[in-house]
Amino acid sequence: MTVVRLTLREAANRKVLIVGAVVSVAFLLLFWLGFSIAFNSITSPSDPTDPAVGATIMTVLGLYAVQFLAAFMAVLLASGAVAPEIDSGRLHAILARPLSRTSWLAQRAGTFAMLVAGYIVVMSGAILSIGAAIAGYGAIAPWRGVALLALEVVVLVALGTALSVRLSAIAAGVIVIALYGAAWIGGIMDIVGTALDNPTLQRISTGVSLVIPSDALWRGASYYLQSPAFLIAAQVEADTGNPFAGNAPPSGLFVAWAVAYGTAWWLLADRWFRRRDL
Amino acid sequence: MSSPTESPVGGDGAVPIAATGLCKTYRDRKVLDQVDLHVGPGQVVGLLGPNGAGKTTTVKALLGMVHLDEGTAALLGHPVGDPTARRAVGYLPEKFQYPDWLDGRQVLEAHARLIGLPADERAGAITDALRLVGLSGRGDDRVSGYSKGMQQRLGLATAILGRPALVILDEPTSALDPIGRREVRDLIRTMRDRGTAVLLNSHLLGEVEQVCDQVVILHRGRVIHSGPLVDLAAGVEVRVTLDRLDEDALAVMAGFGRITARESDTALLALDDVAAVPALASALVMRGHGLQALVPLHRSLEDVFVDLVGTDLEGEGL
Image (tube, rainbow over all chains, first blue to last red):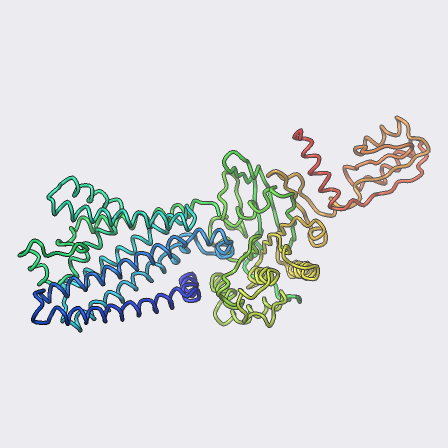
């Protein structure tokens, strides 16, 4: 656990934790302010907007922002997990100790994964609590949704860590961010493909989600994080929907694929790290 | 830096370093070619060689950081690559850097945990290590405030923490001033006195000459000399002056070694064995040659090093 302790201390001393906390509190305050003003507006008798629909859209957008921040945090932490430690020489003093490379990598990347997954849990809980406090918001299955969000960021940490074993921090970071962007485009293609009933676009989107499942995991998570009233309204009126969110739960097979995908990157990171010369 | 008095731990009498036939190729470049390296308990062995000779690769291979293509190596009886092999090994890397967000004590605390020092022994061991490297009073300062030399001292402290049976030092004085260098030499001597084996990787020949029992000279990935320093650096070359240096005298001398220079009635003779000097004198006198002088010449390690590396270069036609 010494490497976990060192990694946490590094995060604390490099201001990652304090800056992350300050920015997050500011974000939550802003969300609370915006949510309360908007919700008061749509609950006035003159506004035709269904309050349940409005609350869901705002909450899901808030959660999307949290997911986005956590994903970038995952990329930034993981892409610098290994390469800078080797380049600086810090790793050599540590690995000269009776510590296996597998243990070091698992402790270091595992700490980053726990940090971002913890961030997701705390921030998602805070957003849902603000929605509940102001609008009485209740999601379909919040824990399932949050678990899928946590899976998304852990997958990104695994991918970033593996690339960090082979590439410089900046190259690893650029690749993961590019893939994350590609996944987002894939998600948009799915929404457009569904709206236009175009199977080609949907197939491409499915292919992208297999190559990089981050956005598909978000869309699966977002289904569980919407209110039941919103989904009923969306089914009644075809034009009611959230372009950032999914209208169907993720399939068990896809979730299994995402778990296998993340595990494969973890195993690959370990294999590459054990084999490389330092 | 003051003297440690307690004996090392963790070796249990096993050979600190036993490496045979180490080979490593990076792409098409052979950086280690059948390297043998043995360090016995309590021995101080210098690993010498010009830049790019393969010294640091050898050290990294011993610590499991570089994977070998061929050869076997064990530290304290455990095959390298097995983390337990490093349980009683201290290491100062050539490229040392320690987390600058920690203070000196926190760095040592992390290393104490990694080597499994019991909690009740850690504080004392850390204080000892800081004292031995001359960092007493600076242990609570952040590493970010350390000079390069202080960081190297901290690296030395991590290397000697917990009194390991084997200490591997890769260019340990590269950032130190002359006083610091002397202190490191004293530290190595006192480690030797208490039975710690030391592998000293250095390009500073004077440093090696002053503290090492044995030297291994690497050049282009190959061992070009390995043996006791006393054999290498002592007078293995003699200056012989005769009444008349004729072919017969040269033939007698050639039986004992290689004639490296000749001028008038004087010849320089590189002996195969320094113990042969009396026999050489007797042989010359018995053949009737008037022996005017026979002077063993001290050759510094630098002379030997330059000769060996130069010979090797000639051998390769370079």
